[in-house]
Amino acid sequence: MANSLLPPEERNLTPDQVEALDNRRDLGHTLLVMAGQCAVIATVLLLWVGQDLTYSPGWAHPMAYYFALVMALVAVFGIAGLILRKGKPRID
Image (cartoon, rainbow, N blue to C red):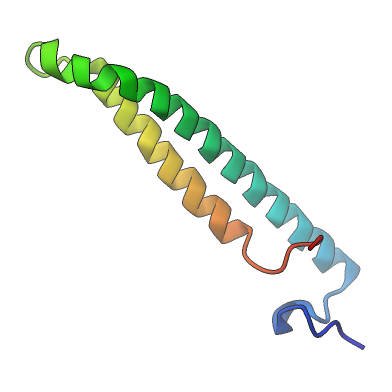
């Protein structure tokens, strides 16, 4: 009998499909970890962004550009990780 706690699309999977599902969720978890690490780096970069925007002349704002790049990576990795981790986890 199928486990009624699982979503309907995951109740009758073959062992190969379960392994593929686990691999997808592991990749999602890895991407979420990478998003968290990038968020820590963005927090450190935030310490320099204000000074960079205030004192750097013209369009020369390297810290602001790095900060924008890291924030974009946080968004991409976080959204991709959440999409790949969808469903019921293996261990409750």
